[in-house]
Every structure is written in C-alpha cells, then in structure tokens.
Length: 107
Image (spheres, rainbow, N blue to C red):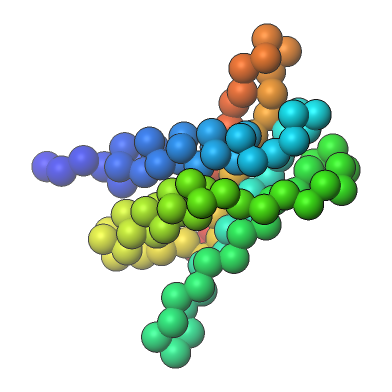
C-alpha cells in the first residue's frame, strides 16, 4: 500500500506555511493565504491572495518559493485524481514566538 495523500502533501503544506510566514511583514502575527484553482478550456490557473486577519493593509505578494510549492501541491492532488477548488492556509504566531498553521481544502 502506498503513502496516503495526507502524508504526501504534509511536507508541502509546511513549506507553504513557512513561505507564507517569510513573505509577511514581521509585525503581522497571523496571515491567511487563499488559493483558487481553476481549469477552463484546457488551461490551469492558480490565484493567490495573502491577507491579514488582524486588518493590516500591507500588500503582500507570494514569493517564488510559495508559487513553486503550490504548483507541487496541485501535482500531488492531480496524481490522486482530484484537485481542490480552494485551499486556505492560516499561520498564527504563538506566545513563545513559534508558529502554527492550519490548512483547509474545499472541493
């Protein structure tokens, strides 16, 4: 039996979370990355949006590492036969200075 889907995408999830943390200003204590996958007329699309749940208005662009990781994430799901429509990553800084992340996929 092969590796589970969750085990296969978990390291990529962590890489996406780490890249999201690196992309945001240091005064942000949390961030949300929303990714939308589309496939129309044979063309794939990935839209990325980074926002601050704290209400900061800084414009934050995804890094090349973030784009690369999300492309690999799509490839993992495509190999399994189904890609999500939306993926949401939330990172939150802990009181000890570390970070945690959560991921949600909508199909």
